[in-house]
Length: 163
Image (cartoon, rainbow, N blue to C red; front, top):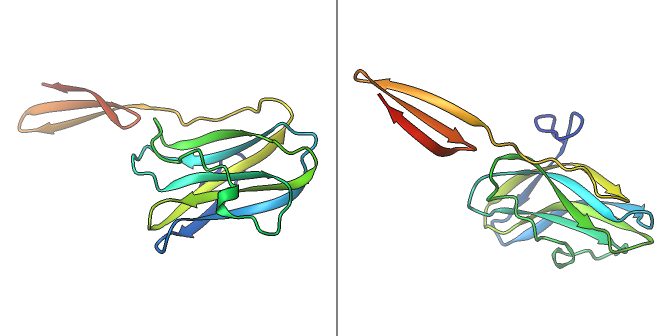
């Protein structure tokens, strides 16, 4: 658990996965009656980095004693987004009886990584979602009597003015 980041409430799930030996998946799971639900929504902490290290890992389906990496939907990367912050990923619930919900992270790079997820929810209609917001910032630096203003949006330079 982490109180440093939360998309809803005051805490989120913080998970570490050590991928130094190979890729893999870490998750938490809970049994649930899925018959009343059409969607699973999960808020994940995403980044702007082009280097894919973690993927969202989600499973909704029959309870199994041998859940494995290949059972998870790993189609959503947590890297390469327009802004860093919380983003909701929505999944269809294909199972309509007793089963389990499992959410976590898949690592695709041979390193250790920490991921955050929050606000796991099952719904019978399109869920509300969150997206990271891009922010515009202006930074002015002065050297040798001249000034330079750099404008950025979501960390990308959108303009430079020299005076």
